[in-house]
Length: 217
Image (cartoon, rainbow, N blue to C red; front, side):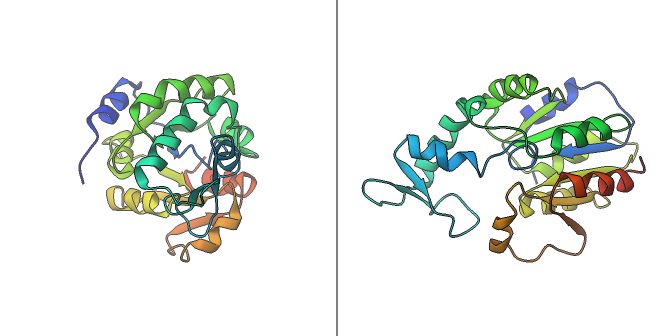
């Protein structure tokens, strides 16, 4: 499993911190994505039909009905992230939960997106009052979480909406406390049951006390 050198560089910029570590995905964990994205697509002449838990194969050109290919999906996602401040709001309960957890834990946001979108996302998070460190990665999240933890073996919790990212974290940090949180719980129907070592939470109100307990806060 290879590391993303730019992610490593971003981690090295952070101040050393030995508090318990809480790593958070951004889209559909801290910021809404699944709800605003179809509205954005509509303005571009596309529509989203969620028939499975993936974007490719579910986005069609409205006029022709043609399902668009991966390259077009990637381009549309890039366009969306360029204007994310117009579309993405904070997920329900996240700001309050993070404010409380952040009193005794180090909170770091880890988003899987092209590094070129980092500055736009950083500005948007700051405007929303979410001034936690932001890391971007174009590779698996697990190695980044292991690097963030450091050598001291402090407690780690990781929250993501994508099971593959949680499994990546498990592979890199065997004792990480993993939480599966989705801004839109209706999408759970498309996923296999969560493995026993991953805690499924419905929302931030349920997640916050469980994370605090896992981190010993």
